[in-house]
Length: 374
Ligand code: PLP
View 1 (cartoon, rainbow, N blue to C red):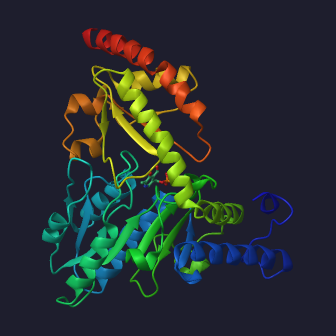
View 2 (view 1 turned 90 degrees about the vertical axis):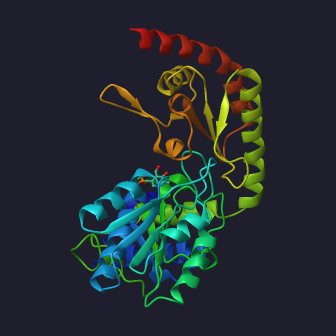
């Protein structure tokens, strides 16, 4: 990325040498990203991140399909990231009908429920590839096959978008194999820069651009390109897509060490989400009788960065919508903490968490009880 922040500072729209140089870097990055996901380069659109890609896919395809008279019904799931959920709610405000299909106790969408939601006027389905809170992998390939089957009896095909933000580095991403028409990525989830992302859009997919302006990104995303971000995105994705089996095995073993260690040390701890068919790097655990933010703050004081699924609004703890959709009891949901492992996580890191987890849970239980009584 560094050369594009100083020496090679041209604007890709410039016709002069520095501009052509920047354009060739963007073109090369587009070829690299396309190669990683089995796409053709013009099907790769660089964006400002996962949120923009997801909003562009839902609104862009939704509006274009509706304008073509194909219908106004969208199917998504109750466990999408807020970028997907809130974009779907916005479509409802714009007159679309949206069905939010549920999931089983492991967070996995049921094909039968998805199929039952299909209507003649369905134009778009959006199902994440892997969940960011519990790591559950969704049956996107099976849904793609089902939609192709459904198309035989319809005048139009239902377009399929997948939020694949959590997938790079862990799952294979071939767009033909998955049967998706659009797919969203966020660079910082695979070692690239924050504020950069990718929207894959299959050739000939009906699409109305979200950002209007210049003709950049094949007229699908106006605005001067973030050349350094794009170069970083391509380099990081190329690395992330290498050796996913080996990386997965190594990180899964570490995750299992963390899981077994926590369950052995902390009475009442429960793992949320799937045990199989899930990302290797994610562990979501509920601890009894505490609010997760209190535990996350205690772990932070020890230099351990974990995250909590619940959010505080109006002085009450809002449990995670994902855990709620899975049918996790509310007391269990407010005490849930997510540990994310990465490429660089070591056994020593895991053991550092295990050394303190019991003490921190007990301290958080005392603090949470005191706060509830206050
Ligand atoms: N989708 C999923 C599954 C995510 O985990 C995230 C970010 O955490 C997003 C979308 C949004 O990505 P960004 O914050 O890069 O816009």
